[in-house]
Amino acid sequence: MWMHIPVLITLALPGTSPGTSPGASPAKSDTTAVKAELMAADRALAQLAARGGAEVVLRALDPRAAVLFPGQPVLRGAAESRAPFIARYSKPSTFAWRPVHAVAGVDGRFGCTFGYSRFFNSADTLKSARKGTYITCWEKARNGKWRIVGTERNDSPPGDLVLADTTALPGAPHSATTSFQGSALIDAQDADSLFAVFGERPSGPAPAFLRYIADDGLLIGPTEFPRGKAGVEKAFEGYPSADRVITWRPLRSFGAGSGGLAFTVGHSVSGPRPGKTGRSVNQKYMSVWRQE
Image 1 (tube, rainbow, N blue to C red):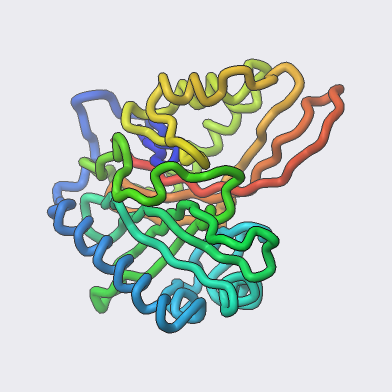
Image 2 (image 1 turned 60 degrees about the horizontal axis):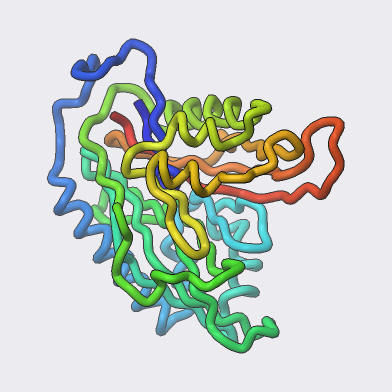
């Protein structure tokens, strides 16, 4: 099974069942210690960026990293993201962030941090800092240092982020507890693709999310974080599934993972169903998955 964290999802993998773990890896690290490492790495990067600006973040990116931020498609590493990233985040604009939670793979080589951000855009008519969220996934290099392999900044939400001034993440998801042989990333991408198929059905995206959301799964929203099945059901209440549909597919050339944890990214479209009229909105997403 795979669980998806910012939308934390569960999907059964062939040949597995509760209580059995064919091919499971016997090597497990102390995920509590790994989470502490991830939080420390994220905090250290935030402190460096406060002094050195946007270029500091770009230097922390793995060349294959997925980079997501407003106004751009999914970009790869510093090579593709440098120009638009610096244009958005360099002075006189300012940005900062603060990690509040981490999840880790059981092998101690991969994990993701989540937190709150503040962004002041000098070109914005809103002359105050925007409060947002971010997710950053890290991979440990051979030299023991953590490198960013994926990051998504939702730093311009449409409304006030209620929890931005706290250190809380209600119902925070737990780390991976098991890992199966094979590619964590490919399994997560396959799960994401199946999840998307269910989302396109006439019943709309809500049943798809209800089918796959974990008990400690979160939807990262602008004002609240719907959690589990009850939260998802409320979040999608009244969604006009008969007229509109959300379609998405993971980009197979992006993503990373190990130790029962992985992330996927992709582009999505919210628009009218065939035969209906209305505006289409292009979007993108980053999802963190946990194996069970």
